[in-house]
Image (cartoon, rainbow, N blue to C red; front, side):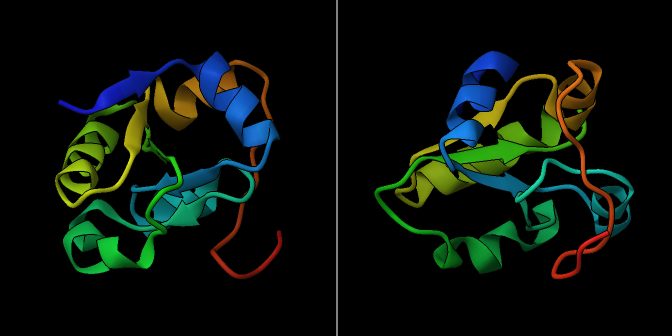
Length: 108
């Protein structure tokens, strides 16, 4: 089972430039995501996992934590250092942390 990290642990890592991967669907991502999070919908993780850098922690986030656990498990089975962010993007926003809207590759 993938390691889980709290919102506070993720926030500290994010502030230092950690790699965040959002595994929700594009419409969910566009509606609001952690600034700088890379979109990689869960269904694409097996095919795109190799795009992620080895040797660097990957913080996987979704809406609430379910899809991120699945994705982090998959990434870990492929040799990455992935962890799931508990509470997901909903928890991030509820904590008053910044959220960006818009599709990947464009600012909103």
